[in-house]
Image (tube, rainbow, N blue to C red; front, side, top):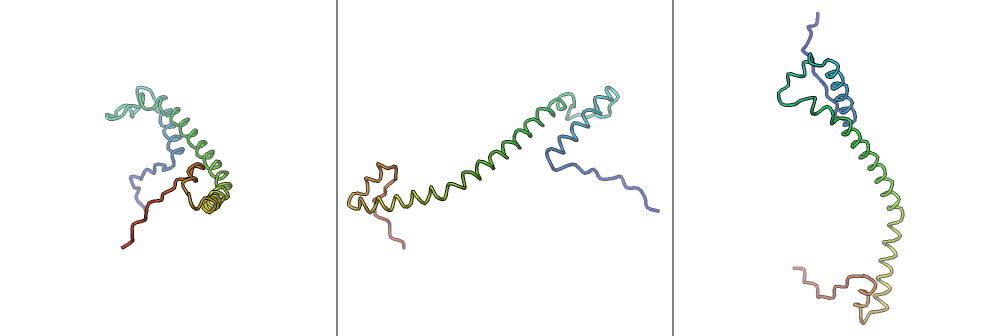
Length: 122
């Protein structure tokens, strides 16, 4: 016959699940009132930390929504970015050939023109 082990407590690694667990513990602690064994804790106090759960969940949910929005915006940006980069590169080359004798004119278009001599690689 197998003997009973003291058991291992598996805590959630997912933030949402961890906050749900905190909420359940806090509710049980509150329903137990003064008889709650959690009142014996010395380093933490559920009456202080417990009320932080709801705003923490709201902040987490808002952060998750912002991450989803950011992902969508980045995807939309990335659809257009290659063509924009290409037209900038082509425009730079065209303007460089048009103003071959005075490439500093490209600065009028917003380009940074570095006409210093490059150091020899050695």
